Length: 170
Image (tube, one colour):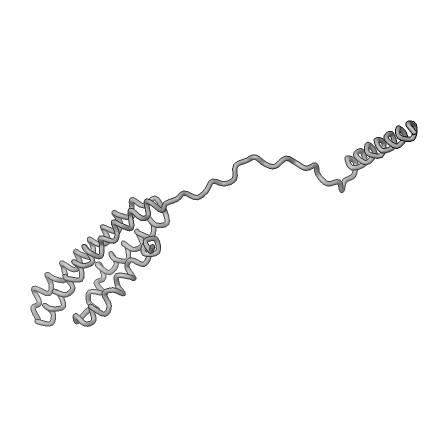
C-alpha cells in the first residue's frame, strides 16, 4: 500500500510540474496575479464649504447695503424725472450708477477671498454683469416709473447675482 501511495504522490507531482511548465510556455496563459496596488488613489477634492459659507455671509450684506442704496437712488431718480426736475434727476442717476459700481466692487472684493476657483470666477462674472449695467445704464433707463422699478428690481438683482447665487443657496 505504501508503494501505491508513493506512486500516486509521485504521479501527481509530475502532473503538477508539467501543468506549471506548460502554462509558462503557452502564449494564451493568463498573466500571474499581481498583488493589489498600494499606490494611493487620487486625493479627495478640497472642501470649500466653510470658506464658501463665510464669503456668502459677506455677500448677503449686499441686500441690506449696496443694493438697497441703489434701489433708493433709483426711487429718487424716478421721482425727480416724474417731477421734471432734470438737474436733480441727473444727480440721482449719477448716485444710482455709483451705487451700482459699489455693488460690483463689493462682489469682486468678497469673492476674491473664495478658495473655490469656480466661486471666485462666478464672482467676477456677477461683477461684470453689474458693471455692464452701470456703464450702459440700460436698466436705469428702463425703470421709468416706481411701479416698473418695483416690478423689475428683484429680477434684476437675481440676474446680476445669479452666477454667485448657486454657491450661496443653502
